[in-house]
Image (cartoon, rainbow, N blue to C red; front, side, top):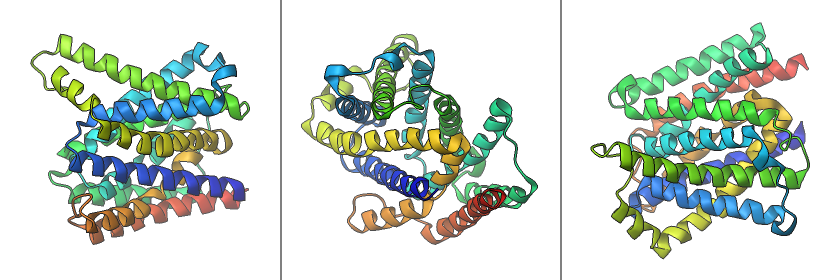
Amino acid sequence: MPSAILLAGAVVILWSLLVIGMRAALFNFGVQPWTLALAVQICGGAALLLAAGIGSLPLEPIRRWATWAIGGLRVVTTCAFTTALLYASAGQVSVLTTINVLIAMLGVFLVFRRGRQPMEIPGILLMLGGLALLIGQLDGGWSNLAVRYILLSETSVVIASLLAERHPDNLGDRRQRLALTGFVTLLSACGLLVLWVAAAALLTEAAIGPDIEAVTATLASPWLWLMAFILGAMLRGPGTYGAFLLTARLGADGYMLGMAAMPPLVMGLEQAASSFALVPKPQSALADLAVAAIVIAGGVWVVAARYRRR
């Protein structure tokens, strides 16, 4: 258990830094969200495969359907989450993502028949109440696009985590897991590119993704690849590996519960970054922090109830 707590803390730090880094890149360098997401995933996936050892790279993960399914779901997650950052602050988005705890609890019950105990119910209600308060504070409330994008993003995250929990390569050794996470990340990048091409060909009147000229100009920028290396190889790659390892140890719902600790860290980092004009200054940081406290209190209650049973 102590090692799992340390691992969860490390993953929370990596994902929090990634959220702030993505938001800073979007607002300071004029990068299109999907283009940045593509470059970050390429760098992150390449770093993971290099760590697995290109000369003797395990190829089993790429032959399994679950690997392709997880990669496809992460395309949805990446697009939806990155776009949500345009409609709410990083702190608000991080609190909204804790809805994945509740979605995961439903998912593990439906798939693995792991139910909840009565002692966990007050914590679940606290989390629901906190999320409802946050959504009420957003511009437009439930109609705010950030809410819709996060619901789509986190549902995809949970389904991918359910697949990862029982994935043979995630339950294998370190090199198998590195290969799995590397292939998943690169498959996500390829899926993102395919989605662009399909949208451009089939939905000519819709403003989905950047046009070809914008992609070419952005991808030719050395600044994009510098940001992608920092965010992808140093944050997203290790964060993805840690997330899969944590899912294998604690299950999909345990992983999501650990990630519920992200909001206060993201909010603190966002405040610090805004003081250097790296991201827009959060407009309601105190209110968001109060809501985050309610959500986290609910998560702590669930963890305490679960630990008590053991």
